Length: 331
Image (cartoon, rainbow, N blue to C red):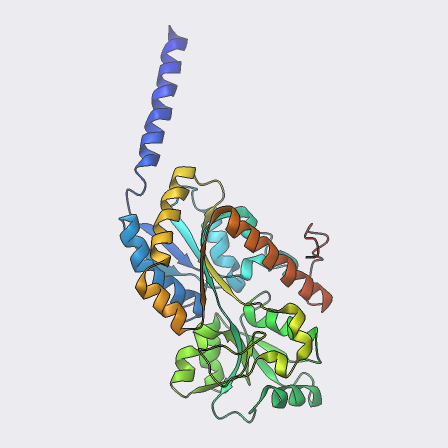
């Protein structure tokens, strides 16, 4: 009799848990942005957030939690319960953390709710810079190794990765100065703290429109409509062609062991949000490409992106840990 009671109680508990899980979300969700306010990831997150929370039916509270090239926010979300109430608004950085010795966590530990889109990177300088072309910058770097200062977001960040790709093609000995995100880094560059900075086009767009900043090249095999007249980086560095197209990406992630029904709710909400006029307009205005992929398709994209990038870092000597040791094969 006692065993029968226990079995009945267990069944009720399972049914109750399933019912509760089916009611997700019952309260607000925390959306953790891995970079500081004003950067590209923050801009994308705040653009998609209103439509996502409307589709989800509960508020998504945005929290900026920068540090460690994104590792702080990744660890924060990873330490939270696997219930869908803590999501990560992330960029590409965690895919590089293991090879850069920053963290053992990458997106293989998470479920990609939505890879919202990808951006085009640029090489930016202040509008008053002595560098008028990418060739000018490269010539100065070659003539003064280690003396030209580059804005960075730390090892594994977008600027350091682009620097590794460039270094794999030409002489590129610069001094990297880290900041807490692309936004703070670009602001520091305008203040004269660094000479140039690679960044996502979306983070630099408003500064360029305001006339405060000039783009020397787009890190793309061809010019982009968002920046008419700006040459592709392959004009100055033809050897870069083998790495392109390449660029930052932006996505929404939850822990990998989050219940399937919760994942499904989030996937549906962000699929709707990624199609919203406000979001698609912002992405187009900032030169980003809307992707709106999830699940297996997103996992395939993440794996390929990681392979290309970490082996570029390894080939330039920038990787701290060999991709081979981590089981990441060459693409």
